[in-house]
Length: 416
Image (cartoon, rainbow, N blue to C red; front, side):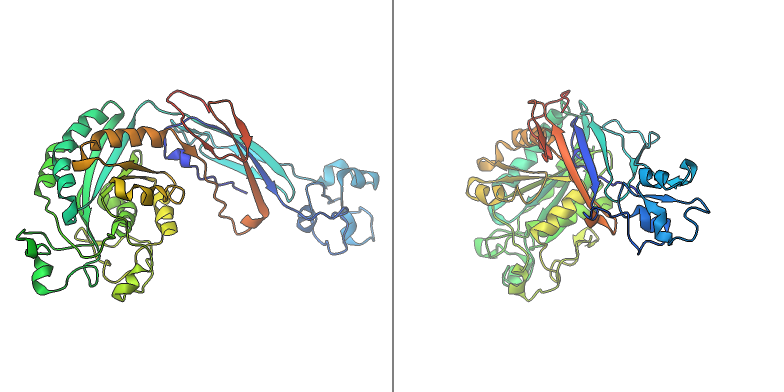
């Protein structure tokens, strides 16, 4: 039996010792080894960790086959020779061939019997510097003009500053507005081409999500792309941020997320996001399927598929090892702060007017996210309901709390 453990500390740079107790539940009957229903060795061993099977050919000759099952001591008393007593023990096998600079061991195979238990330790080593992929996902509705202008100058400065914290820093870019259907946008033909025509400003058409630039080291190309961006417009207050976030998380090849890098998804917006079921306002009733739907770098299902649920978005972010950084203005800060408990590995920061603190916000978010570790346990076996897993985390402050899955404020080189 293989124990599969998905650890959120795989996503962050931390060192953590985890003590896990794996317990397989079994019946509570006092004499679970004694039953006339037992007819095979497998039936017997499933009764509990104290049950053993005697395979000696002439053991209790003429007795019912169920008599071959009992405790080891009972079988010995009844005359079964030691060599014929089948009573496999718990076995923990560590695969040392799979190396990692952070998590050790990477793979553990555990052989258990019903009612058996095993303990093992996982050690996670924080690295000094990690490769980082930062993807800017920017709301380009008209009210974001000042923030977009600031991004045109802040990107290069951030790249220089992140070199102090990352061994290989890369950036990408995508934009979103809202689903380009009524009632989210004005569908008058003139407004479809230029949502800002009433203000004598030439805006780009509204769009759900456009992937503009895969993550790259080429800051000259990144700067050029940002300089080319223009605002758009829509009618209602919420935007299609969650639609865009899910696509940025699951379209790994398009975005260019590197397996070895830390994935940071920076969402810049001044409004909340539409939620699942909001699409019904536009007659959109097909639930989101959680898949990538980029065609020529454009989200193709924006007008036909619902917004994702928060749980669905959180699952896809976690599944693809993506941290979310919400850079929002003061008015919307509380709305996004309420999401932190619902979206693991997320951070929200207040964006000052004209995004003047954008660079410092990202660096602080990066440090904060890497200082928190939370273990996620996943049991994928069909009999997963029969397993119980307990985690004990040893944190830098000296606390050792059974059942705790998280350590906070962990600094580089600390052992937790």
